[in-house]
Length: 210
Ligand SMILES: Cc1cc2nc3c(=O)[nH]c(=O)nc-3n(C[C@H](O)[C@H](O)[C@H](O)COP(=O)(O)O)c2cc1C
Image (cartoon, rainbow, N blue to C red):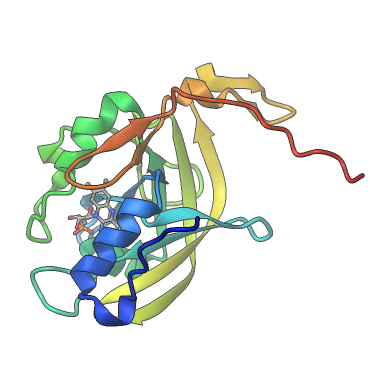
């Protein structure tokens, strides 16, 4: 890149830094996170500051922003994860795009996004928190660390205790082969409500050491 515009984050507002990060770090997978509220009702919310973080132990990371209703407070998802020390990351397929966005609506805690988005759930295998039935891959997680990032934000590391994969997408159970295109997952792009599907693949194999 010979001709570039440098955006110095120390000179920019939080909002503009956010715009630049989310417009360039794309596509981002979406963790559709289920947690249990204090009264055991279900809380659901999507998070795209999400990825695999480590192999051993198997960890995923999610960055949870500050709550909007109370300056400095974590969102309900963060509060629930800290209290229950468990959650499910439900990956999102194309057919769930609309339901997923409905669960991003900022209801008061105690009001069920799951009911608003008509989400059905199944029980999990190793944790109490249910998973979303329609998700083609759902990772059961136990809290590994929650790192306070200030301003009500936290970086949650979850240890994956197991993953439910839609049987139709499992090629070989013993060898753990999954037909990833079959999952039809979507990912977050930039701006107002833009997403992408995984329909444009190419293969580029890493060469062996010369
Ligand atoms: C596709 C998508 C991705 C999002 N990613 C994040 C994220 O990474 N971090 C975050 O704090 N909020 C994110 N949000 C906003 C939350 O989903 C929203 O604040 C939601 O109400 C949180 O739910 P809760 O209050 O029940 O925890 C995202 C919203 C959408 C639609």
